[in-house]
Each structure stands twice: as C-alpha cells, then as structure tokens.
Length: 331
Image 1 (cartoon, rainbow, N blue to C red):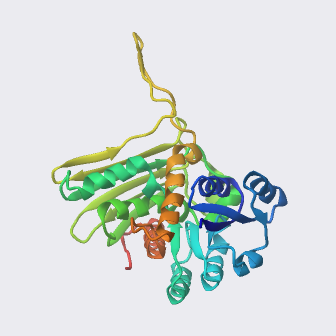
Image 2: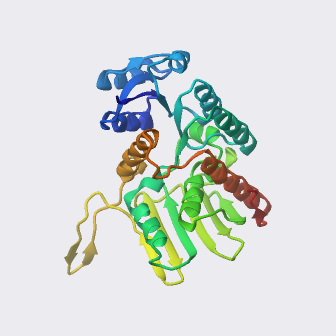
Image 3: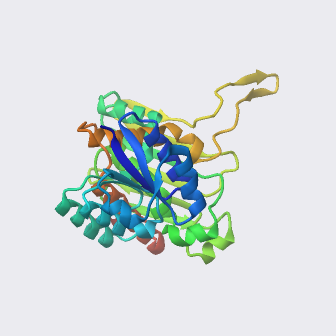
C-alpha cells in the first residue's frame, strides 16, 4: 500500500515536494494545509489531496508522513506535534534558529522513536553526490582542503531576511552541511567574516549580504566557503575537494549545455537563474530517499543530528563574524 502523505505549506517549495510525492509509485498525497486558501486549493486541485487543518492531519489515521514547508519559527513545534502523533516527518531546514530549541525538539523525536529527515537537498544533487562518491571510493585519497561557492542572483525580500536568521543560518547553512557531508565529520572551529556590499537595507535588518568562512578540523583539514546575495551572471554553485591523491569538483550547471566558438572567442549560455531550476533533480531525489527510508531502505538520509550540527556551525560562524575571532564549534 502506498505511503500516505500530507504537506504543510503549499508555497513554492511545497509544490515541488507535492510533485515529487505524486510522482512516486510508493506514495500518495492525501492532504494539504496552508493558511492561504488559494495555495492549498492549487495543490488540492492538481493532486486530489484533501484540504485539512494541522490538527486534523495530526489526528488522522490515514496519514503516515508529513512534509513541513512552513515558516522556520513553526518547524520545531510541528515536528514535536507530528512525532507524538506517530507520523514520520520531513522538515525543510532549519529545525529552528536556536540550537537549544533544536536539542529539545530532538529529545521528543528520540523519545517517540519518530523518523525525522531534514531537507538538505544538496546532498541529493547528482553532481555533488558524484564528488562524495569519488571521495568515498578513495579516488582522491584523504580529503584535505575544500572550496565551496554559493552565490545567489539577488537578495530575498526584506520581510524574508527578518525571519531568516541571517546569511549564516539561512544560506551558508547548506554549505556547512555540505562540508560535513564531503569531509566526513564535524569541523572543530570556524573563522568567519561578513559585510554588506550589495544593499544597504540589509545592514538595517542586522544581516550581511556577503560572507566567508574557513572551517578547520582538529587534524588541520580546511574548507573555505564564500556566499554572496548578488551574482549578476546567475546562480553560482560550485564545490571542489582537494585530496592527498587528487581532486574532485562539481562545476556550475547550465540549462543548455552548448558552447559556441567564433573569431570573437567562446560563449556559453547563462547559468540557472535560481535554486528552483538548478536543484530540480535534488529535490525529487531527496523526497524519493525519504520514501525509500520509510520503506526500510538504508541508503542514508540527513537526520535531526545533521540539522543540529549545521546550525551549531552557523551559530559559531555568526559569533566569529561579530567578534573577528576564530570560534570553537561545540559537538
């Protein structure tokens, strides 16, 4: 019998996950909730899902799992609600913006023995997975240094920035998770810096739009990460890991992979314009991995501890940027 899913939050990312659930033969979308009736109605009409309240979904006997695409400040309490209701939970990152609150939430997950997956979609990008496979297969030896570049075409609206937790917890947290994923374990310290170079309004909101961080491991391994809220040439996403016996890298992706050469030089089409097109395969892969895990497969998914680890790095990075000093990362 297919697993029966509910989605909370029928906005942009909720619609992406609804499509992935509907496209998997082992799952069906049974219910949707969104405080905006039009958004819920669009998903309901497209996939035949019932529109229900949060409380009805928690109490429903015909719901096996929920996908949380709600605002960050609702994540922890909703994870606890559905864990206690016996539902498996997929939650978009982050679990919360404060690590202490995440720890309390994960205690509930542990006590109820609930399945919790955190939505670090980049782990499921085919290109980044290829880099991870090259490392796991020993093709580049021991990973020693890394470079991760993430640059958005433009900054999100000010209202979003106010609730986001800032560039380290909202944007670079993906790269912190990717560093742990590729290097194999947690770094022990971080040295970070942040600036406002693209939009003065971001400074008034207490955030940065340009940030860098150097993660360091106890044995001296390092990963350098740079983020920018402005890349006029498109959505810039690159990873490189240097090892004792070689290097593995994932370069930028283009919607069209052609190259034209003339007397004036070489030209290529532009990059993807944002994450919704760049990570189409990653979003589908992560939902399929969640469904497979609920079916008993053991391929490995990012769990609550992974969400906590990335947030611990983000909190230390923010403190480092504020103090101009390296900060130890608690484990």
